[in-house]
Length: 182
Image 1 (tube, rainbow, N blue to C red):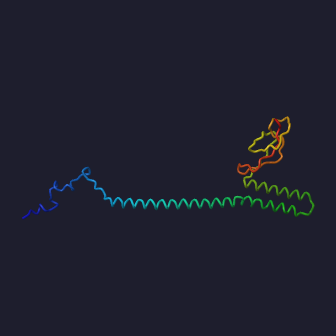
Image 2 (image 1 turned 120 degrees about the horizontal axis):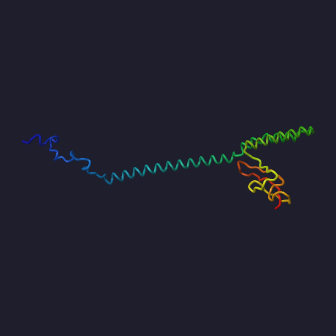
Image 3 (image 1 turned 90 degrees about the horizontal axis):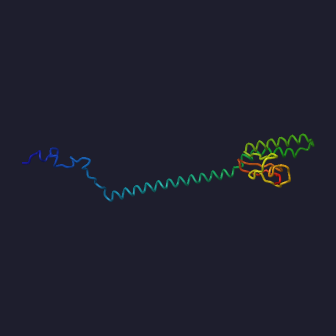
């Protein structure tokens, strides 16, 4: 007859069961099978491909949205300025329709029109370039139309023929000036 204690796994000699007595240092790493590794690689590749497709779609959507916004910005860039110019046009048309022959009324209408135009320029960031006599010629702001002999410093402005204008620091038209000859 066999001893019951010998067949009982709970009472087996600890030396005879090495799995139960293994420490972290003694543990043996069991490598996954090649099939398991290939399956994991395929899973990660699928995840990466999905993430790449999502990222590409997001970039495409952002690009399309940006292009639409740019087209709208170009299309409606002058919208605000055009709104400001409508009253100016109305005042000029009213001045031309006036048959009263009253010079003072016409002058007052032109003055109102000019004030409306100045207001439209201010709201649209159009700034006047109005050099003063004696200022030095700045080729970034002024265009010398001619030079004349003068007692003034050479290349200084002696006459303004036409004011210039800038839009947000970009020159729309330089001021046209006459400078003192060297």
